[in-house]
Length: 120
Length: 106
Image (cartoon, rainbow over all chains, first blue to last red; front, side):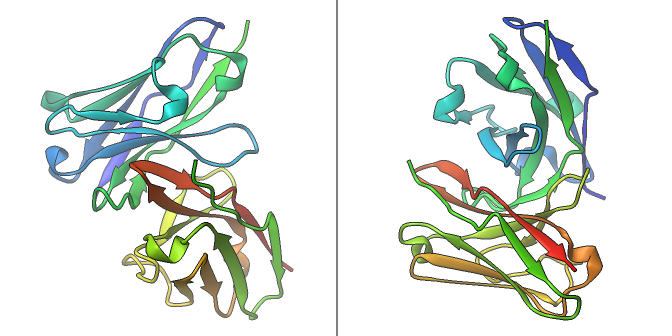
């Protein structure tokens, strides 16, 4: 079945960077865009951007431009999201999600989420 | 920037119909989808393209959209439907989520 499996919990200091992975299986990796969405504790969903696993092309939300980098490794069907210059307010669950029908942006399925905690 | 507005909470009795709204400027001109997020779980797509249900989603979930408002309707609400619900659309190459609605079944 279609599955997105993310890397484990991360704890980072302010100013550091974090890199989260998302391994896809059960479908042709290069056929579907992958988005990243985060959710701060007790809060709503915030879109971060997408990557085209085929071309490597990206589009980042304005709030994250200059701090986020999305990449992929087609040999292991994995996409990565790196967030730099971490702040306390970056503490959140980070999700990857497959786009069913780009650019209509319907996300299914979602990964299990990766908790990133920014703490000194 | 584009904004989607949802009521923070909706309550419904078991077996009754729950209605969750999502409002945005000319939202009826855009495609809307809805996600269900149960506590401690990842979001699940329940409605896409305004009205369509993914396979595996119960028929009691339905959607509509017109004017400035999209609506998620849950008929015959069950206790397992208690969750947060988020609407989503896209505008100018940007994905936008509503703030979410907590559905309480009591």
